[in-house]
Length: 174
Image 1: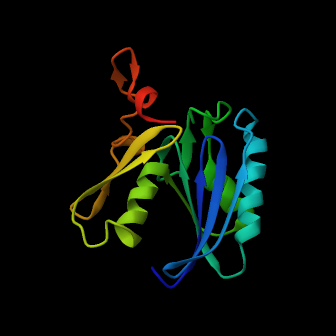
Image 2 (image 1 turned 45 degrees about the vertical axis):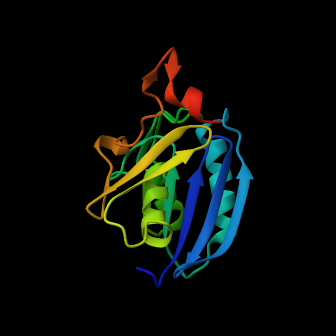
């Protein structure tokens, strides 16, 4: 798994970031502010710009983390809270058709936790939780060396749970 070039994309509420992972090192990075109130097509143009800036003939796959629930098998993103036009986006299909390489889509907190598990503070651990605190609040959970995603990647998405008169993310995020 470590000998391939892979593009990693982080779609956020205000920015989209991309990195080119070559083996175990990050060899390129780019970011762009997105129009989160734009249409699906407008946000996709921003994603294409990031991917286009990183891709070459040696890239073997693209991984995309999104702040939402995801049908991982089909790569469908549902109801991205901070991008209102993204109610049901068949992201895997759209990106695979454009770039003709495999695409994996998952919740952004899950992607973060997997990244830390393989390359960061989680290396060598059996269990861990990776917290993401930004515009939202969530977590990726590793149990027995496996990502525990729950239904539609929602296992660690506690930021929207009720707390006092709002939800957790109201008190503990950007």
